[in-house]
Length: 279
Image 1 (tube, rainbow, N blue to C red):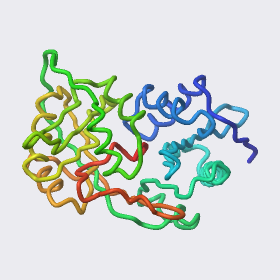
Image 2: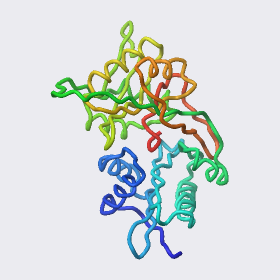
Image 3: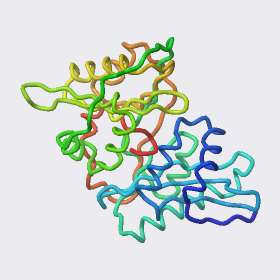
């Protein structure tokens, strides 16, 4: 079939929202704006005569590695090579920028395609969700993303993603939490109000007690009936704490990369990622 690839613009956000709603994803208009603000030359759509039928986004983190996300294709146009062409467009763009490594979080359905394009497994992630009776009333407490948090996050994530974290923190200040021990930052977390659920991430802690405290505080701050967490499966405490709080397993994801992985960060200190679209 005939389709063309072009840069995504803010005018395409409604089309992107339509595709993510068809797929049952949690992103909001604010998330699409974060992609376009971070990478105006690296977000793409596939278009036919009927309009936008596919999307893919990229974000470069400090030139160390880039993230590929929001690979969406209208179900009526699947199995026609659109998703593959969007991915190839992302890879070609990032190669032209000299980015040495590309990362993404793959669903089991998408993993074989990514493997064909040269991606290999780094580690496993599990999405967990909690359903509960929503609570009412405003949350008046608010936090702030600090330079200390961002410095620590660069070490743990593997690159500077301060622009994304500051944006999330400004939009959702009630979910910006941190813990300190003997005057030192021992952990922090952020969160987003999504279309379907509140989403905690990143959730970072240097010990189990800190991880538990952050999760407990987030659950108190959230008023949502559903909460998502994309936990790192190998974390020494994340999955145990989620089970303890009666979260239920929802789906598996695989962190994959293409090229060199010179800056893996410290995944052992991450209880949960920001999300598959941001890393």
